[in-house]
Image 1 (cartoon, rainbow, N blue to C red):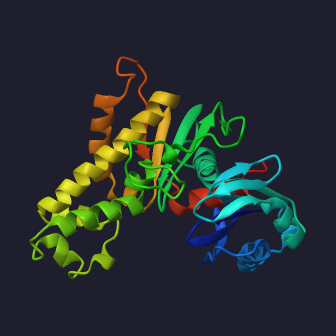
Image 2 (image 1 turned 180 degrees about the vertical axis):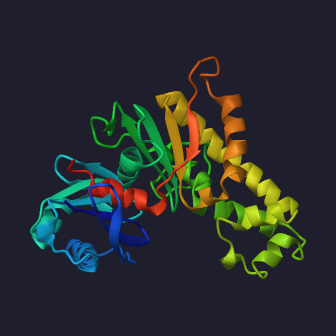
Amino acid sequence: MYYLGIDLGGTNIKVGVVDENCKIIATAKRKTVVPCPPDDLCEQLASTALEALSNANLTLDDVPWVGIGTPGTVNTDTGVVEFSNNLYLHHFELRKYLEEKMNKKVIVENDANAAAYGEYQAGALKGAKNAMAITLGTGVGSGIIIDGKIYSGSNYGAGEMGHTVIVFKGRHCTCGRDGCWETYASATGLIRTTKEAMEKSADHSSPIWKLVDGDLNKVDGQTAFDAMRAGDPIGKAVVDEYIEYLGCGLVNCINAFQPDILCIGGGICNEGETLLKPLREYIVKEAYSLSAQGQTKICKALLGNDAGIIGAAMLGK
């Protein structure tokens, strides 16, 4: 048996064909073009899905359903994306439109929930009873597993930890609030923090400026870490501040849900223990459950960018 999983992101649409062992055997990818009419978005999804199937020498007849993870609040009963700020979607009937386009059963879930479910099925969260997965990307995604099932709450919007406020009247978020965790802890937030620190510096000959050839447009989520390793005090200050922002939100997650395991994914996690070690130290100092015998394990997600595809593909199981 084979399964088809779609990871709909604000930047890319990624599709994978997954086998019974949660292994991806073929993929397809394209840039996401939004905002756009519903039919156009579904055409983007369907054409990429069919390309992935073709790459696996399969057809839609070879898969039982199409699973899709999308940013935003998703009513999993109706398949409606109630709100997705990064995709400009409001009450979008994704399941209805995509089923009409592909003539196949479609299962829709929040993308972070799908990624968490992928890690639960085949990655860092496998074997846990209660777990969380945090994804650091354009925003901050979070998925919650309770008693082996995705937890989405009575209105399907639970788990949006990226939109909890950690800085009162802080940075404006695309969701409409100010000071959301994702405006500081996402890759986008880290890039912004790095640029702001560089702009305040009068020394444009410092290592951090040399890393980007004096061009702020070349700053990415790795710049501050590379600068820190090069002995740049600006880079170190940015990394230290970032770890505190990230750690603050993670402590909130642990205090609220007390998971057995909390895994962190996204490109920033390629820093490995450079990121995780000080994060664990911060959490040990700040978490409310300091006296508990069982402490939440903090680790790197294992499936990387494949988690959302695998989780989406396995939603029907």
